[in-house]
Length: 284
Image (tube, rainbow, N blue to C red; front, side, top):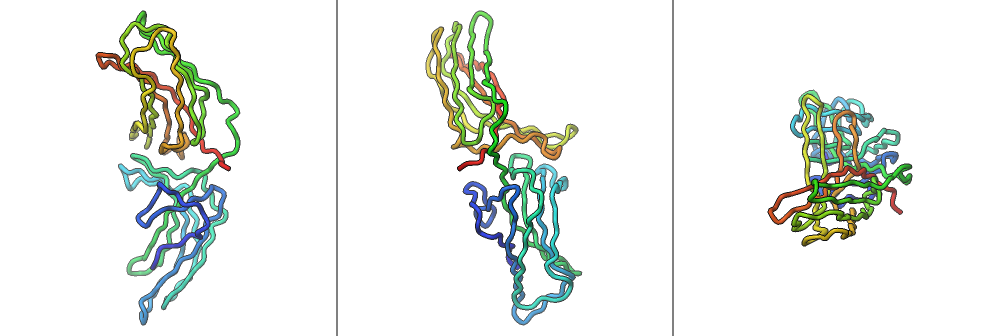
């Protein structure tokens, strides 16, 4: 039996692959359709109790494989009990299946969608699965998107104000900001900004928290002077970002932070983190 085949009319995801290659992307409200081909060895007959196909949305915890949660599941019967000979082809169409969450693959958790065909037999079922991706872009801009202003200070030694132009960014956006040095009495060697992703998976009694730095870049090299203003411009497009996910099915969350770090000549680090919200914009 070959894998189910999804109609090849969708955009391929270049960075998301399974063991057979790139995956297809569907919007949350798009139907998922395709074909299943079952091949039986010539001259042989395959007895079965039925052939079915399912479309499943599942959250899987890598640290506990048994603790998976299916938030979407729909079954279609392709064939009633009988026997199969030669080649059989079945069409399937899941046109009204809820796909509320985006696909995600992180350190401790994965949210995946797949179609699975099952041939039920009394002496062991035959199954095959095919994954696909779901994205839910929006053409609605956030109603409130204030600038972010914060301060970093060490009494009588350092006082910095920094500002980002927005608090919510789409995945193809550009972060624009500035850093103002109001008081500088320590010898700063350089300054960098990083994007941090924080993943929380599991429940409060059994929660795994992971923080990873997705990118960092130097915005200043050398000691600044009082009154100096350093501009900041960071393009988000090149990085492996997802939208912010908040408490998806009470199973996991993904949050993003901008981390401003100053390093002095003695390699002491001074930093300030600010959370930003990321969302997927409908492009073109």
